[in-house]
Image (cartoon, rainbow, N blue to C red):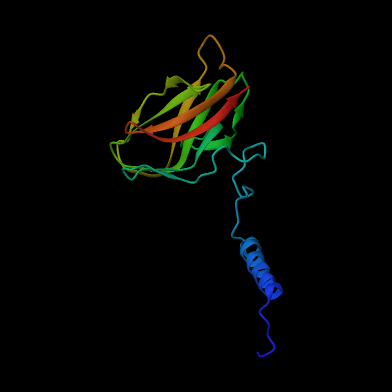
Length: 171
């Protein structure tokens, strides 16, 4: 160790190695994992509009992943998801998958079009505790006209409080 010089060049190399380690090691070890390549895909192979798994509401209710769908099964769970619908669509479904809801909880969806309230769905009240259930609401065209093209949002309201929102398009 007697021949070891701590001059400016040696200090610069040490600093460079430390900076490189701080910047490169997390990437090499997978710590910078912001990609959405593992996000669920809709029926066109596109990432769904809302890849979150659950939303926990203050009173312990957990809404599962919220998706838009063109159809649901007999349990109200989506059979095909998408974030865009053609103008001739008769019904648009918004579904909170795998949700846990306690008895007495009131849930409804507020629909927005172009940032303005469009309509509120009828509220439902849980008659018992539900686990891993799908909560589905519909936006339907009226008997006279189709749903108007534009940007829409569906916002779940739980016991009067906003819980989760998802955006979609009607073209």
